[in-house]
Length: 111
Image (cartoon, rainbow, N blue to C red; front, side, top):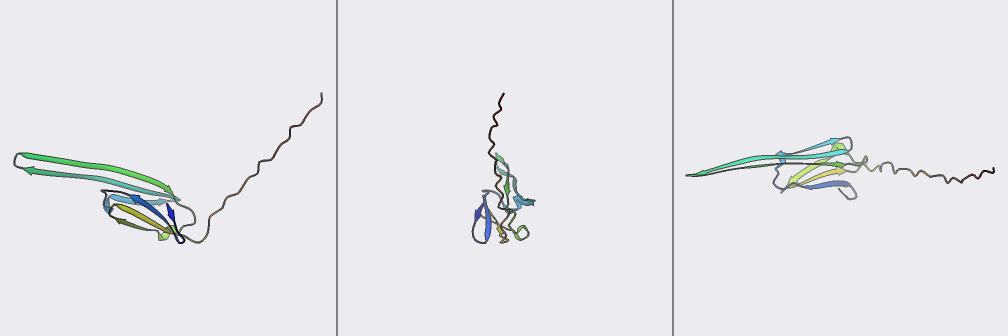
């Protein structure tokens, strides 16, 4: 995932796949990219017969930050490279919180 001032971008190489072979889903903060390829070719020349079958499946699941505009995400697929762009909303997400660990002193007992 890459970031610039206005967008987050996911760039994935999918060589040999066509846009119709690829599906993109967003479930909560999980971006799911799946590609399935199933092609076969047959060549007959006289007594020569050749049949090839190419199959493949890829799946990637990536976390998408809360502060991106998921409704306006856009995808582009060119020359085997999938680019998904999420505009930033301008609202940074929860920065988190530090939780201090108390220092405990050992209590000495007198017998």
